[in-house]
Amino acid sequence: MKEVKTASTIEPIILTDGAVKELIKIREQESIPNDYALRIGVKGGGCSGFSYILGFDELKENDKKYTINGLEVIIDKAHAIYLLGIEIDFENGLNNRGFSFNNPNASDTCGCGTSFAT
Image: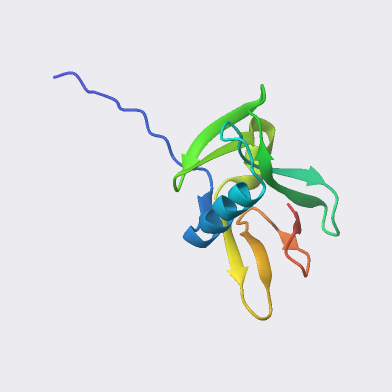
């Protein structure tokens, strides 16, 4: 009997329901075009070495596209190593309001949680 292999599309990141709800709200408020996807990435900077990129953008040459929790997401292939397994949530409490990043690849994070080191 011949073994049948199926392709697996593992989502590289986790977007919580709260994050998706807030991102959809932002998309509607800012009138972001439907052909734009959520870009998640990193850039050099911040007090710990890297800062997160989170915004809507067009698909570019080095991007990989995913559908995560119903939202189209694009990640530059070079950034994936820093983002694999990250959970992005939206907090709306008295002490914190905004997106939070729980990154298992980070060896150190800053106090505000928006930058990290590997």
